[in-house]
Length: 148
Image 1 (spheres, one colour):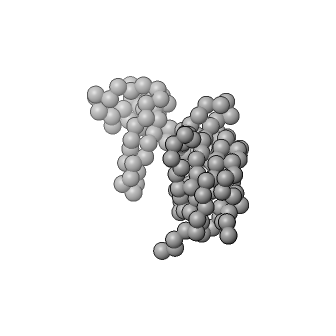
Image 2 (tube, helix red, strand yellow):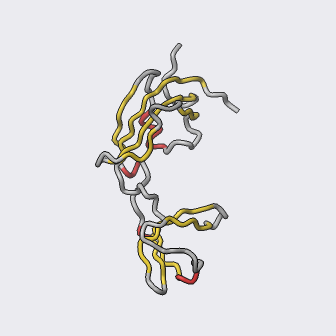
Image 3 (cartoon, rainbow, N blue to C red):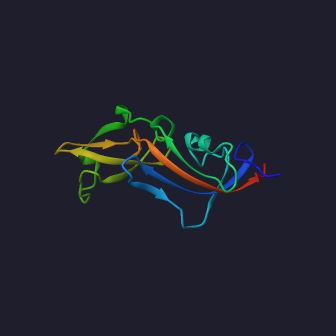
């Protein structure tokens, strides 16, 4: 019996993520299929829900709203950091992505969106926050997932 994508399945697929203007964010067409186990957290839930019910061999294009993709930008995620917190050898420029330690000790990327002599303004929102994503997906294989 052929399985469709859903809870308890391992899915093998190729995909691309693009913005509405046509610019490509990620693409693995032409390469090996990637796999994930449905519900394991490796895909954002909004992308995962698009796949429910798809059959092996099926290819579809989905439009994923920001709320189901990378969320809306949050103004609380834009922060001022004193300039002296940056090493002197850091060449600050708009669009520079820096890595910061978060409260849990993990790494949190932030983009420089402004700076002056005293402060650096860092945007910690995901770079794709607020963007509608075009999700092109081709499901190759669906297997029963091994439950641990």
